[in-house]
Amino acid sequence: MQEPVPAPDLGGVRPSLVQLTHLIYALHAIAVVVGVTSAATVAGGFVFGLPSLLAAFLNYLKRGDVAGTWLESHFRWQIRTFWFTALWLVVYGLLIVTIVGIPLAWMLIAVLGFWVGYRVVRGWVALGGVRPVG
Image (tube, rainbow, N blue to C red; front, top):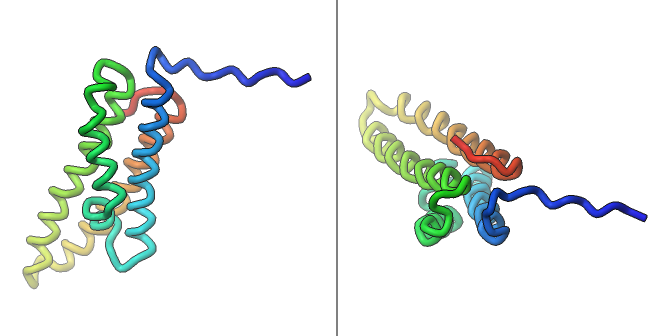
């Protein structure tokens, strides 16, 4: 007879909120994959892609439900990742329109793509380990 697998201790958080947070990370990851596999950049796909826009909407919609829990750090991490990426895309846009700034803009967009990927993976791994991120 097989022993049942023990469920992880979720620290008083509803399992549905943990599942929602997994879904949000999955949406962000889909946006990263779209950015890698299409003509869009990773950062552009992340900020302007439908999966990440939906993920950011869900973050804002449900962040009150996770306030005061370890999941709050994940929502803050996801929201900050989204908005800092948007901010750096504005900087990229300003640099790309200048002749002198084009090489710097291309380096920025590459670094930004790796940074977004890192943030999604690091946060999702922490969520899988049932611990806060940050």
